[in-house]
Image (cartoon, rainbow over all chains, first blue to last red; front, side, top):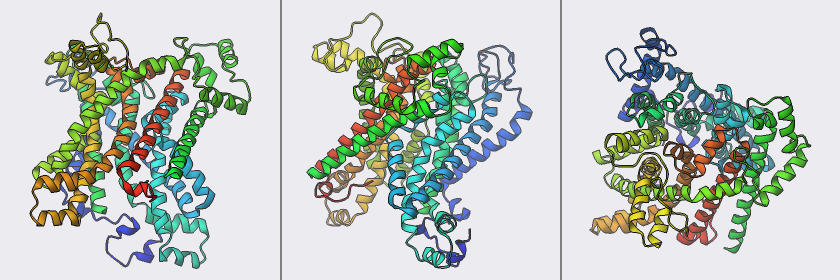
Length: 290
Length: 341
């Protein structure tokens, strides 16, 4: 972060550069941020400690099929007699890791492309922006769906498909930010100092253009979790018997109308809570940056 | 104004071409054997080769591309490998069911989102506002498939207030004579109010599922826009000279907050087009979303591709309509100012 040297002396929140300059202390004074953080810390603890205390998420015959929630099985058992709590907890790792991976991937690729578009301008910009327009002219979930369906069912392909669907958002955000940052004096200074264009773009302009993308990445993590689970629910990507929230909801979907609500509604609730936590963090981060 | 119109429509056509290209790239150029995918998981080499020839997948890519574009331009979306019917006809037959569901869902979302957004903005940072914002966060984090099952469990299984997931009407009930394809509207047109109510009853749960989730983005937009206008000088003036709340909230505030709402509806519609796959599957709603679901289940790439193109066309058209609407409701656009991105 060499750019910090040029403006690091001013301790103000330089929102106009979009630089992420938020102190954790001020964020912790926001109640909704604390709620989101608490939920995520809770998930992390459960995901780490849970597997030691709970039965094997793939083991069948844990006290009979479709047992209602009880002291032995707080979330009940599914139609194969697997412990729903153990499966829901095992799925935390998979789903949250996938969500974070997708957001990181989309942000990395998206902001790199966005810098190219914004810093170079001209036909490079024009070509890149027309492509993002087309991708954005499409509901992201449908785009991810067809890419995943064509690439074939496995975890890697779902990550790629969903990441592609979110990349254009980061291209747009970064480009808009770069357009204003590249006119700033420290960029001129870097250029005059003899840095090559690529170095100026990626070492000086990019780090100062990431603020909005960081906020977006937090939100995208939540949406990516929803999309991965939604695709799995439709039978695209991750499939049974993997302990994944969307797969679990799909497996129990037919039993819900017969009154066996716990097999679907517990893992589904875990999704919503996790996504809500990421959205709370994102919203509050955005409020702090503004 | 005329120049803007021509430019805007030209841009939409370009985007449509882009979408057709995108679908081609995704289905032919991405790694993965298109022929093997179409032939299904149990096909042997000979069958895959046969499929390759049948769909012309053995020809050079540029040739395939020209073929692809020209057939889409002729509204030919190919033949479904699952049903052996033209994909276009199958999609068009199912479209009204989806549109009816979507239209009611957007109406419900506005009915929830508009008042809540206004109240939250007027009572900013009060308990009501926090409550409404909590609802918005929950709505934008909601997994449609979970909410759908939850409502089904309570609305159908526990309370028995709503029909189970069967179809648009009870089994054995004849659909009203087709005028619009919306069963509720058609039934009213045919003078059969009872049938209209039945159709509405069957719509209720899927509409509630989508509407509750779609209310969140509308609510956020309305609240944000209302907050901005309420902070504006002219509203402060109106309040300080003692005009009644009705005037400054509804006339000054709300009318200016309407613009972003129109944009929000565009965004919401895009979400709807993806979400209806899940909701139509849960409620066995015979629309294009359920068609797409069936296509996925049976590896019917031709049908899935057709669905994706139709979704693209619908989305681009709606956004075009919204932008043209802007020229009517926002004089800044009409007078040649820049259109907001």
